[in-house]
Amino acid sequence: MEINNVLVYTEQHEFVSGSISFEDGIIKDVSLTGEAAAGNDVAGDDALYAIPGLVDIHFHGCMGADLCDAEPDTIKTLAEYQAGQGVTTICPATMTMSLPELHKIMANIGAYQGDTGAHFAGVNMEGPFISPANKGAQAAENIIPCDAALFRELNRESGGRIRLVDIAPEEPGAIEFIEAVRDEVNVSLAHTVADYDAAMAAFRAGANHVTHLFNAMLPFHHRKPGVQGAAADAGAYVELICDGVHIHPAMVRAVFKLFGSDRVCLISDSMRAAGLADGDYTLGGQAVKVKGNLATLADGTIAGSVTNLMLCLKNAVQDMQIPLEAAVRSASETPARSIGIFDCCGSLSSGKRADIVLLDRDLNVRQVFVGGRAVK
Image (cartoon, rainbow, N blue to C red):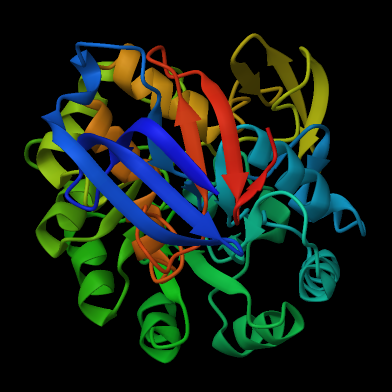
């Protein structure tokens, strides 16, 4: 099959008129026929943008389902919804659950053999190795110290599908944990009260990622740069939620200037209400009230988002003045690189999966191909 007369997002992170051909689910050729043009202000005809399918490495649920439900159809529900939104590869996140629940969740992940909807790249293990002092919407009673043996047991049960494990680096045993597992999984700093020195110690030990930057960590202060300053100095990947609730637009712009689109991973951090109406839901066993684009616990704590990654990309461009080229990179290539799957997805390149999204000039999804198969 061939897609003609589109503005192709190239490996050089620019839009150029051209075409894409694919066969048996793989991109065979990308032919460029024009000059590079600025994605935010392309003059001329109404050619669609062709971008790589997005890669969400941190979300919990959608359409009433949550990864932690551990039901046979849970991941299938997540994968099918996300594919329809232009998110063609997913790495959903667990929560700080009890150990029996975590074992059940990982067993369910290990058993998943789905072939519909978005590609399932693995999971982001958010908790239980976090700080009780900055738990956010996680359940305090299930927080435990870092445990490499437990992590390995859970990873075996998941079929080796844990791509990220989140920890608070200031907690006892955290540095030893990083040193023990750094060659087996990407370690991310999360739900923490670490200062700059504690965070730098974690990065030197092998951590390479920060979970939802600014959220559930100490503020970025001019004399106390904290996790944010350490991440910038260490060259770590950082997740950013651009739902219009979690991060002020000025801070989004500042993060792109500080880290660059090659280190910023846009994420949705969505919970089970994404795609559904306002109402009462749950997250990690806790009651959540959803009204508009805000999801909160009873005490007012923000409990994830109710958006999806494509809408976050659109927000970043249209409401936060992030160049389209940078936003696309941060929602596709950069997250794919961060969890080690860029060899198969994250760019429109010959030999990679034909995960392609066509957008109109208002960044509305017009068509989605997952592995060359049209899903919208």
